[in-house]
Structure formats: structure tokens, C-alpha cells
Image (cartoon, rainbow, N blue to C red):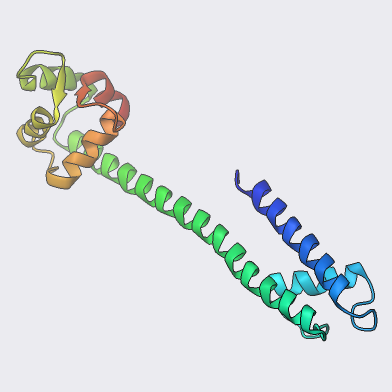
Length: 177
């Protein structure tokens, strides 16, 4: 929704600009008023094209041809925004599903949030209070929750918010439970 004001402003500028150009280029017998030119512009931008009003002059045809091209480019902007938002939501969905599966497997094995500090203590090979990715994958393998490979990397990124090279037991419990 943050992009909506910018898109609406751009649409208004396209409609007002091309309406003015069409109004100036066409005879009054074809386009009697600026609202009439705006009607032609809005119908063209919306790709409806009723055909009730069409340009008759050469200049009007060129202006409307340019409008058709600009309209196609304008309509592709929201598609990119929507596509990007959909992709982001889909990735988040995948991450949440992975965390849910991990939580269910964790509980099915009889583990709880209280067990996590002990797991971290056993698998923290360098005694720095956090697990590197290698230590993290070894822990997942040892506690046998059925997560490995790409899923382990996605989980690690979820626990570190993608910005750290290690995960703490507090972050693990906060995210998983």
C-alpha cells in the first residue's frame, strides 16, 4: 500500500497530460471538452477502448499511440510491485512452515524450551555461548528432528535473522517457541 500514492499520482499526471494534448490536437467537433478528452484518455489507459470517441487528426493519432505505449509501461509497474510482494510473502510462508515443522518434531521427540540451553552447551565446541552453522547442524543431527541440508540453512537464517554467523540459545527459543 505504500506505493499506491505514487502510482495514483503518476496515473493522474498521465491522464491530465495526455488529455490536454488530445484536447489541443483534436477538433472541437470530435473532442468538445477537456472532460471528453479525459474520457478518451482514461478508457485508453484502462485498455477498455470503447470506441465511442477516437482521434481523427494525425496529431491525435500520434498522441493516442504514445498514450497506449505509456499505458502499457505504466500498467507493468504495479505488476512488478505485486509480484515482489507475493514473492516475499511466499518466502515468509515457507520459513514459517519450516519453523512449524521443526517445532512439531522437537515436541514429538519430547523436547521443550527448557532443554535448549543444555543442547547448546553440549554442541558449543568453542565455548563462546553460541552455535556456528556447523555446530548448529551437528545439534540438529544429534537431537534427530529430521532437519538437514537447505532446511538447516533456512532455519539457521531464521534464528539469526540472516545477519549473524552464530545463533544463541535465547534466539533459538524465542523464534521456535
